[in-house]
Every structure is written in structure tokens, then in C-alpha cells.
Image (cartoon, rainbow, N blue to C red; front, side, top):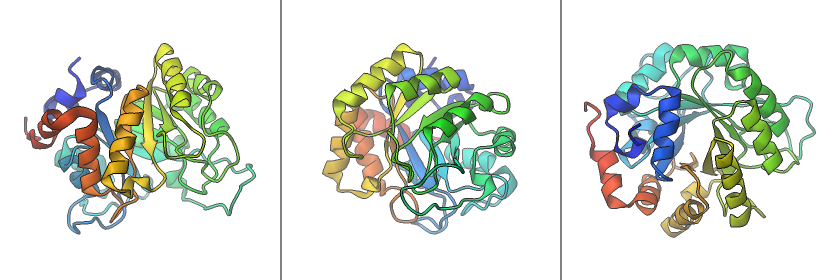
Length: 297
């Protein structure tokens, strides 16, 4: 399998879920995922956040805040087939956040209610399969009440309705007082069918250090899954030196994908931070290869 960081658009768009997972693995820790608030007016004002992220080094695009049952994405004409339109624009794998909300959990703060089309359920899973999503991410935005137990339940049912890759885990507490990630949680997610374990990047949540992450990465890899570190605490808008520190510290720990969040102007990380993250984990050569390679190849 050709590694993702060296693949042409036609090769990327023809990959199955298994192919995509292997191509990420073959890239040896040099894959970048950009999370975008796809419903918000972009920094530029007439193009999508996905186009901005791709232009500065993103290999995977994760859509946040999208109601897949009633989609309304900025700068997208065909709302009912928005995945196809995005793939034409950026020629990258497209995924979406669906939130496994636990309605019974006790919250540390006021709970934020989200629409049914943003939650992980049978209807939304069937719809993202119809849309042609390449992956789904089960995680929680701040205050939505997503729990690890509910994530595990959702993963178990996903393969019935969705054929893409499954990413799962928490970037932060999501308003719930529980450990964000442990080896026990990782094992439950993998046994349930998770392909990629989502973890906080070292330096983003208090008390989660390099030793913790390295242990989880080694355990996850031994059990056949991949790991994505996430900058999901608004630190994606930090200064460049902080971004470069995230990049190297988490690469040392062995993660397969580095995520950069959406807390920037217009719902995408500052373009220079995506670019610096890319240069830090794979150098100028591979960065230029990804941003300059025509989507018509």
C-alpha cells in the first residue's frame, strides 16, 4: 500500500477503509488531520475551511459541528451531497464528528444540548454511509456530556451501518468527571471495533504526560490499532513554537496521526500553524509534496 503522504489524489480517493488505515500506518507518524467547523463562514469568506487546511498541509479533513441529517455547510452548493463536493475540492479523505452523548451522566458544568444530526445514532451512521464519509470520529465537544462508556456502546454498533474507519476517544473531559483515557478504555474500544484511538496531545490536558502516551501507543499498536494525538483545547491557536513542541513531543511518543483543532479564525486552525506542524513532523520536502501536488493527478 502506498503511504498517504506520497499518494496522488486518484489513489487517495480510491482507497478502501483498510487501504487508508494501512497507508496512514506506512507514513510513519507523518500524517496530519485538520478539524474544521464546517458550518461557520471561513477565514477567507468564499471558500471552505477544508480548502484552507489542505492548502497548508492537512492530509485528512474532519468536519465538526455538522448536522448530517440537516446539513448546512459554508461555501458548499450541494448540501445533500456535501462529501462528494468536498472531495472534488480537496481530494482528501473526509470524516465527521458524531457525539455519543450520555443523557444520564452527571456533569461538572452546564450541559450543552446538540441536535440529533450531530449525535452518534443509527440514523446518522446510515446517513454518513450514504454520503460516502471515509471515517467517523466519536468524541465530544466541550460540555456535551460524552462518556467513554457511551463511546464504547456506539462503536459496537457502528459496523452494522458504516464501512469507513472508526476513530474514537476524548480530547478533553467534555464536561464529564472521568479519566480521559486509560489502557483499559483503549482495550474496550479496540475490542468493540475501533481502528484509531484518539488521545489528547501531550501538553494539552493536565497530568497526561509523555510516559502515559507512549504506554498507550505501544499497547494500541500491539492490539492492531493506530493512535491520533489531538490538539483540541484551543491551543491550536497558540504561537508557532508551541505548535512545534506539540509536533515533536507527540511524534517521539509514536503517534500515527497528529490532529490540529478548529479554534482559529472562522473555525479552522491558523494556516501558519498547520504549515508549521507539517514541517515539524515531516520536513519541507514532504510538506511541499502534499500541498503542491495537483488534485487532478
